Image (tube, rainbow, N blue to C red; front, side, top):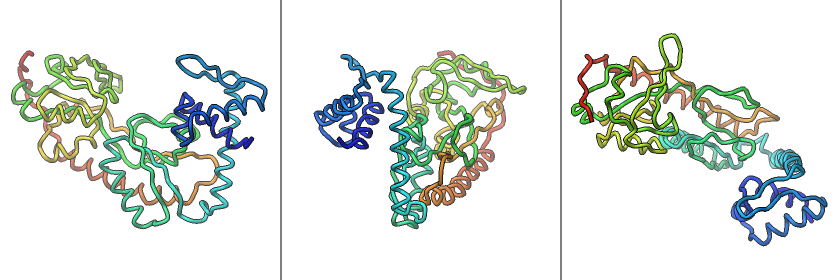
Amino acid sequence: MDRLDAMTVFAAIADGGSLSAAGRQLGIPLATVSRKLADLEAHLTTRLITRSTRKLVLTDAGRDYLAACRAILEQVDEAERAAAGAYANVRGQLVVAAPIVFGRLHMVPVAAAFLEQHPEVDIQLRLGDRNVNLIEEHVDLALRIGILPDSGLVATQVGTVRRVVCASPDYLRRFGTPATLGDLAAHRCISFEGLDAATTWTFVGDGGERRPVDVRARLAVSTADAAMAAAKLGLGLTRVLSYQIDDALRGGELVRVLVDDEPPAIPASLIYPGQGRLPMKTRAFIDFAAGRIRERLQGMEVALSSRAPTRPPRPAARRR
């Protein structure tokens, strides 16, 4: 039995939550995955996974063994990268994670320019609005928006973004422009569940206190693109991040409102594991991307400030 191979299969089962998911990830038949797991458990003379009709659950021995497997496999990967020159040359595959809209607007053009300069590097760009676990999911670096918790990760801040409320000009003509947070109760809203709860938008008061405001979400969506599309159609007010609506604001498709009530800007950072030496491909990308992303976000912030409307007189918003 190839123990490293068996460890890889076992870790894939734990990550995927099933034998079939591990098979798809590794590109091997389900029968092979099942056999390798059985061989590993026979070799260790212990049960690693408890099987039920609905899911697989790691035993106590399985959880301990999985942690050891991850450490061993990471050491093997690092040794292979060192032998292949990953720490001496800019080459290899680079895995980068970013939020969907940020990735489309900013990370894709930066990655394209980087690839032009480094022909021996390939980039796998994973776009999604959840925070990935860099170590467990084998991600080299990620763009993270928000206050970062204390961890073993290293962060390079590349700018700030804002939470903004906006609507289409047509919606504001029909229903009026909210002048205070209290006006939100009389408006139709579109909630982006990745940013706020579906029925509550949280703002920050002058003293830094959190101010939850109840809203009626006529539509709740799971992506910022969907929220902005609905807002452009005049369905209601929505709340997204400033970089997500930059183009729509420039084009006049959406208008920013409640500017004086916006919370303080939040950081955008490139994060990467802090343990061990940093491969040259990762260091090269950070050095290349940080300044370019910073310039993009600073330019967006300047444009956002220049287009900030003054607080309008309080309108009598129409009832639904």
